Length: 435
Image (cartoon, rainbow, N blue to C red; front, top):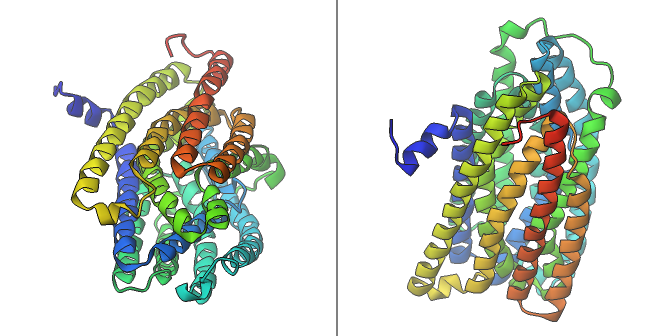
């Protein structure tokens, strides 16, 4: 047996976790290469618009208010109790709920972004208007596919869902990078989401023809209110709180300091988000498995798997953060002009340190949600609002590095509280004390 650290790490990864991390690594690489091309092909003002588009796009993807993740958990519990025949009814209901909500949210977000951008100085120079509305349409139509993918992950195959996501990231990432490289700027983001939708639509059609073993699939559900809503609203509020923590400050800084400062801070924040996205794919990929273990009351296995997940994946996140800071220092010496498009070395390092704290919280959150509850909901909402408020004060009164320090301190402060909530979960599930 390979006793090296890398060998133990690789052996600890399940096939689905490996696919999830490969998917997130691909997305992180696309984000990184995209940022490099943005620095090369766009002005500092255009960079601000680019990341503001992304922030609003993420906001639109939260419009289902936790429906997709709630569907995953509902599907995993149906699998645990042997009611696979109810998955089709679950998917149909989720898609019917998602469509009108997404359409309405697309109109609202499109109007909100337009209101912000028209007030920016020299806004017409970026030619953002047409690209903005095509972008919002692409984000909205792509989001219609989300519940189906989550239900496949929860009720049929985690690995199959993540294989699709990996292929989708590669295909749409190529589109983004090519369009950016040809100097099309903000249109690249619109092309990216339309490419994602086209890929997902083809996969959904093939999936519907490739599962004859669940042709008995029509068992009716009780109701959306009984089967999804009790967990969905908690996940939805938590997702909004996460948006406040990870993305909402971009548009706020755009309004307070203009597109240039917003673009530099957003570029540094995107480094942190890339680390979080890659490392948290490991715990997130275990959500369906934890749901099944809770449904079957296999508490010893749940405790063992989660403890290993927390220790090993957090070590992985810490190593990734240190390596990223080291790379940033080297690049700052080699290409100072390009690195000046970031918020600065201190600001970036503080944000990267925040990524490790976010990873710990993500590990705790995944296991807590396995019983279709979200006991961190109150903490997420209060913490998100407090973080956003304190960061706004710091932005008005100080430099960007003080904004980043405020962000790090707020993130770290939530870990002890989340740990206490986990202990209550462990007692409720009667997990072994060693966990």
